[in-house]
Image 1 (cartoon, rainbow, N blue to C red):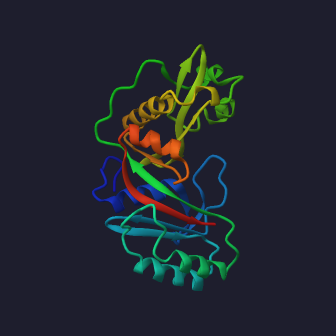
Image 2: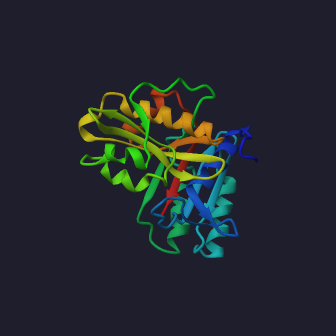
Length: 240
């Protein structure tokens, strides 16, 4: 699939998503998170779509364990309700626990953007070294380290300060995954919707696809997806 090729199926979108999420080794095992701060990938990842599933094992999962997990994945049906755990949820956990205890289970939806995006609103700017001062002395100051690293990085500005921000926190030539944050005092005003929309347009201008994913527990993030009319294409399931 080339940079400008549009995925044809939900499972194609899932493949873009997986490549954006993780760094792979030469065996197609996942090694680390594809992010600025890196960090180890989960030991097992399963993405479920209406037209099929894709999965990955981490590079340190023993082959015998990987084979058992893959057999379960082959038998995993398409989700009738993506919010429901996988059919073989208990089996995945039992098999992986023979390698080591499972400290964390994570699950959530993955979304793509509609073909036509509405134009960005006034007040959203691109953050660069020359506009970095907009982040200083506020809740979003930790994003300073992302300038020049998480391009495109878009912010909504009020009274000379960035109050909501969205940038590319996982990047491949084909797709970018969104990271978004709004300062505590500015939440509830639709600012996240504005910056995510501007970010998605900027990613499209680069010839890549914007992607958005979150957890089932993050209802605020899911509300942003609904307001933007994002299209769910997969349900993620991680075992660490």
